[in-house]
Image (cartoon, helix red, strand yellow):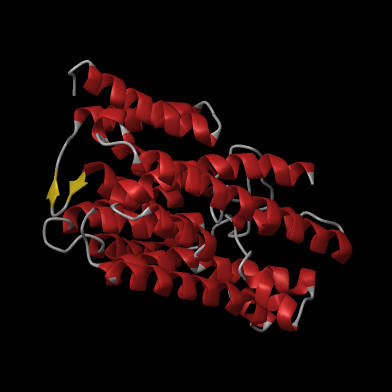
Length: 104
Length: 238
């Protein structure tokens, strides 16, 4: 039930954020601080999410060799400008393969 | 139209990943599809589900999702002029304001084609996103050993895929902001409930407010296949 409340709250909030943009006076966009913040916040959040989801386990930090190797494979795919699906499959396949071999 | 289909296929890949990640985190397939249908902005969805997976504070998860969703406000500001819709149309269109639809729409030369591009990309992307979420969720629901399939790496790999084009476009300051964000979140992890360290990382973004203006644009100028899911198009990719 709590999860449903969180999902509905996120849906409502995200919709209102989108609607606010369509309905707001255009002058807001001309504010350079608004522009800069809109670039920077996703950067910091996404980097934090990569780090925490790769290394975090609840409130502890763990180094899972197979998982980190999968992330390394994702980096390689991104450097090679592979399509998104290839990036994800390369990561999961690497991690799964190493675990199947009993490594990591 | 052809562009919309191309982007739709890329979005579909992200939808599969979202369905997988959501069910892995403990959402039911119904909840996963509800999220894709109504939240409809990929990065926020993945962020919320990541906190659920970590057993973290749902409040922190919702706040993180909303912070990530705030850039859609900026897209809406740009689209308002271009589309010129009011009333009921604007109410419906707001739901479709995400990275990809913004990119496709702003690339059009006039209002008529912009409206057509927005409607088409919104419809095609929305359909792909929801259907592939269902497929990913339903398939994962039948998988018992998540780790053996390497599905635990899907979440971080998705976020890395979203972060990458921003780093490539953003230059040294983008790396600085990202590094501080990741470092702050990891340092705080042992001391704060899951979800909160990620919010703390948003403070690292304040570094970007100091110093001279940077060149990066918050508006996606162009998208092509390789982009990912609603709300996650590669920004200003050339």
